[in-house]
Structure formats: structure tokens, C-alpha cells
Image 1 (cartoon, rainbow, N blue to C red):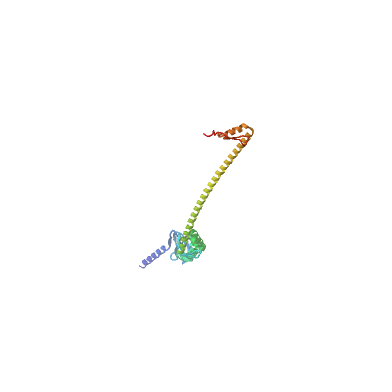
Image 2: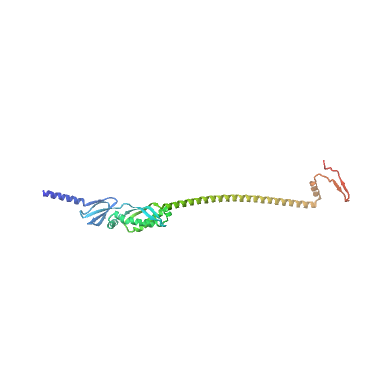
Length: 287
């Protein structure tokens, strides 16, 4: 009977040793193998052996994780801002990085709570404070990059990578948002008034250009008419001078011109050489 108990005990111990002598690391994890409580080595995904009752294992997730939440920030004018800032990150999947993280911080949760969250909050405050309230509303990408740069500087040397920052739901005080709305309304009104004024100025310039064109046209017409009159006068004067020259040398032309100018009337009175002689002729011209 004692022999049976001994065999049974040996079988149970053997099963425990066999069961405790291996482990499986899942995909997306790395396993820290501790020997007597001290981190000894790191294993990647797969089937592995360990020393029963001496070695123990801790899995470290090396897949992407998300850390962060709602935060109270400020602007460069010291105006309070509420927002949600998060960071996507992962543990660098090397044996040294995983072993260092476990040796210094114990677990991912501890690492996030003690290291990453405080550094993320500091980086968010530092990055956001570089921008005015208005810039934080319209330059969200630049704000995100500034926070990322500050976070990377603060976490330099830590065993993490794949850092991506998200900034969401930035909320400014309502009084400031109202002032922005009023400012935009005033700007829109000013632009509308400017448009109306420019339209009026354009209309006035068009009328001015039309009037100037009409004046120029009238001036050109007047100049053309004056030139025509001048040319006509010069032509008539030249004709008169030519006729005068012709008349001076030819009495027949003189008589012809007199005939052209005669209206078919005969004189009604005749005087002789004697100034006291006056004779009235019958009026043949009257019908």
C-alpha cells in the first residue's frame, strides 16, 4: 500500500514538473522569464521550456496601445482650454527593451500610470501653450505636431515607439467663442460694405469713362467739322483769288460774270454826266 502511495505521489509530482516545465507565448506578446524572481531572459511568440518551480514568466503586450484622456490645457494668452489628448504607442519589440521596461516599471499598467500619463500631460500643456486661442481652433494639425514633438522629447530613451498623438474636442470658454462670433460677423459686414462701395466706385468709373468717351467723340467730330470748314474756306479763297487773277486780264470774263450776277432787272433811273439830270424809266420789270 505504501508503495502505491509513493508511486501516486511521484506521478503527481512528475505531472506538476512537466506542466510547469514549459510555456507558450502568444502572438503580439513577449515573455519575461524570471529566475528566482530576477528577470533572466525574454522569449518571443512560441513554445518554450523553463525550469519548474524556479522560473516564472510575465507576458508583456507589444501591440499598439492607447493612453490619455480629458485634460485641462491653456493658450498662449493663459486662457483655459479643455480637450482630449491621447497617444498611441507600443513597447519596442526587442529583448532589451522589454526586459528594461519590466525591470524598471514592473508592468505596462504601472509604466502608463507612473511615466507616460504625466509626460503626456506635460507635453500637451507645453505644446498647446504655444498657440493663441484662435490658432488652436484653426491650426489643429500644428497644435498636434507641437504636442507630439514635446512628448517625444520627454520620452526620449524610453523603450517605446510608434508614437501618434490625437487632439480632440478642444473647448474654449463660451465668452471667447461669443467674441469670435461677433468679430466674424463684423468682419463679414465690413466685407459686404466694402463690396458695395467697390461696386459703386466701379459704376461711377464706368459712367465717367462713358462720358469721357462721348466727350472725346464729340471733340473729334468738332475737330473734323472745323477742319472741313477750314479746308472749304481755303478752297473758296483760292477760287476767288484765281477768278480775280483771271478777271484782271480778260474783260470778257468780267462781262460774263456780270451777266451771271444779273437778275433780269433793268435800271429804273438813269443819270448823265450832269448831276442835275435825272430821268425815270418805265418799270418794265414789274408784271
